[in-house]
Amino acid sequence: MNTENFGKKILSIRQNANLTQEELALRMGVTPQAISKWERGQGLPDISILSDLCRLLNVSSDLLLGLDYKNFTEDNDAKTQDVILRNLGICLDPAAIIFGVDLVQVFTDSPYAELMTAERMQMSKEGFWLPTVRIRDDLQLRPREFMVTIYDRVVYDEQVEVIDDTTLEHIIRTFGQEIRKKYGMLLSRDIVKKLTDNFKISCPALIEGVVPEKISYCLLQEVLKIFLSRGNAPKYLPRVIESLESALYRNPDASVEQLAEQVCIDIETPDNIAAFLVLHPDRN
Image (tube, rainbow, N blue to C red):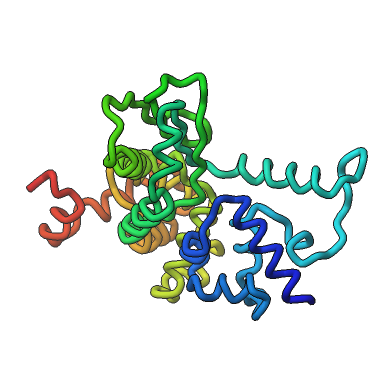
């Protein structure tokens, strides 16, 4: 493979996706230096992370690797096909910030990438994995209005009274708060897999042979939705899996609702009262 051509493709596609090297590196779990090295044609990503790179850049592995792939437009135009694939990839991004015309300049002139990266980092400390966030303007919105959407459903809507240096920070902070509250809506099987894959590093005995062998991603997703809807955080996923495995062992024919209720009982009513208050600081 020509590493120089490969690097040029990554650079071009990353820039077209409005991602910085730092953002792409953070989402892939590598260093910005690694991204820079690939783009300069001085190295190649490990084959084990190639699929993540393709997913984040919204391209096929054939396109990224320079392999021939089947044409699917009447004129077989490669550029048109790339645009179609990229548009389809954007449709898979579940979370979005949509804003009116007066707020366009806020996103243009302010350090959006840095602020979103900081919010993403904070959310990760709480156990939330945040997929790619779309941002776009909409002329149908009021000039100073912004919305937070999940799979095109509006979960928050606000009219900004004054636009100043703190406006973008307020929007990003509000976005993070709403995503935390509605994370169950955002939760997909792909996100569940990423969360469990991450915990497999620190808790291999808990995950290996259990998810998805005994607990399917679908079942874990449905139980987690109920668990999160009660104000719990995804950082308790290891305990959810442990409790769910035990509940399934005791009653393999239990419904999703019954299993979720048992998980919530196990985690929300621990013997250690201090641990309970950590889960629910509002009860102090």
